Length: 254
Ligand code: COA
Image 1: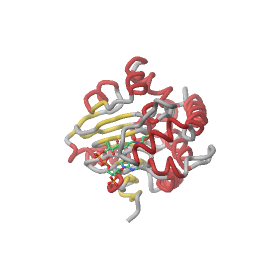
Image 2: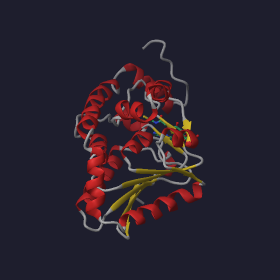
Image 3: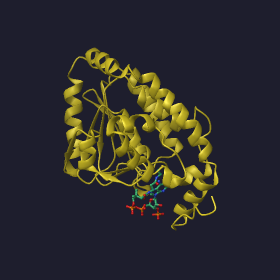
Image 4: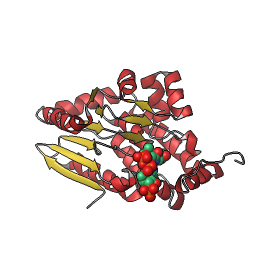
């Protein structure tokens, strides 16, 4: 079975991250599949709304760490950057349902969704610094804007998880539900959106976002250049090796 499932029903295209044995961590191939699916959804008359979801137990463990070690993204056209640009500029409504851990890009992709529903087991984290990396997905711009600087600094510099109620309080999620209800609720809301006039949805989203669309894309490019360099540096290599070897990283020499 594919690691990214896609189906369209009642005007709603649902993309399900489906790699449970690896905690829904995302490989280059999965980013490429997501980027392609978003492009197809943008072009298709069948799709009026897109839902992104994981499993009741896990949304995503973020980038596949073995992939980071073995084939780090190279250049702006790498699948991960294609996916990030695609989600940041997606013109139709995007709804996310998040249960369990949402690590790294599992959290930063949510800044680009219009509505986010979380299970009460959701744990959001952006542990880039702990991995010798830097913010991505325009989170260096959007987290301070949404959370306030000090709470963004806590999330991005300490990199510790924050939970569903805190995410609700800072405005990252719209509603917290029992995990068994989150995906279904997102689907109900998506169908409600899909019944509305598409051009009104698209124009209203465009008008809400237009003030900073260029800044978001620029932040992603700037972050991407630094992130791409840091992936190849000793601190990140040590963090990835430590994860694969199931030991604590030793940053004393980097
Ligand atoms: N990349 C590759 N493999 C991953 C992974 C990732 N991001 N996250 C989890 N896995 C693998 C684990 O290595 C483990 O493999 P194994 O069965 O061969 O030992 C398996 O998935 C299950 O993970 P495990 O850590 O045992 O599950 P858990 O429920 O205890 O913890 C997480 C879940 C998501 C909290 C934890 O796996 C985690 O922190 N993952 C890394 C997240 C990360 O740093 N991502 C990069 C962000 S930029």
